[in-house]
Length: 234
Ligand code: NAI
Image (cartoon, rainbow, N blue to C red; front, side, top):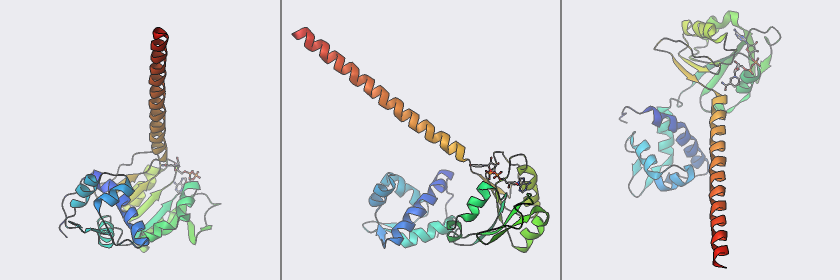
């Protein structure tokens, strides 16, 4: 398949396509039109066509999209057709929550180990994954061909650990610590900030409420005007 330069915006939308197509596959749907997909995903059909045209040749006029093919191809683009070895640094609340989530493995993300500095946590096992001390971090990364690391440690500790990870060969950091990391060009960082997502949710609910208030106010004005008009007539 010919690969064009794909915009960041499209890449951001791909995981959602992947999830919907996976669900369609599970329910036995073999093909789907952009209109039908648009209804399910609440995205315009033209957006879907535009996005998926980036990869060429997926859709056929009058036939729609071949769900399995599209799912597989998007999986390849996202690099989840292969396995990624991942470690979690920081085995506290968030680190353990990630370790307990089994669906990452289904997507090819294999959690090879967890690390912490708290002696009370070291040696514990979470869903079969042992929590280790950070002393043998570099050796573990080499021995287990680890390319990815989730950082679930306090932000003050994150830069130092990120440097160690990069020096040991980690190429991708899934950063939950609230700090921007400086890494070389050949290392990628994906920042995850749930609180930012929550703030966006707050903005949306507040603007929806404001909109409703405005509509109510307009309704009250209309009713008052109608009442005044009726009073004038009588
Ligand atoms: P926690 O206190 O339960 O866990 C942090 C763990 O990191 C502790 O077990 C601690 O011993 C360990 N740790 C500290 N320094 C370390 C080091 N140098 N190497 C290895 N382990 C180390 O905290 P929680 O709730 O799990 O949060 C973890 C981090 O994630 C915090 O920085 C928090 O602000 C952040 N966070 C981010 C979210 C996001 O959406 N980005 C959401 C929730 C938390």
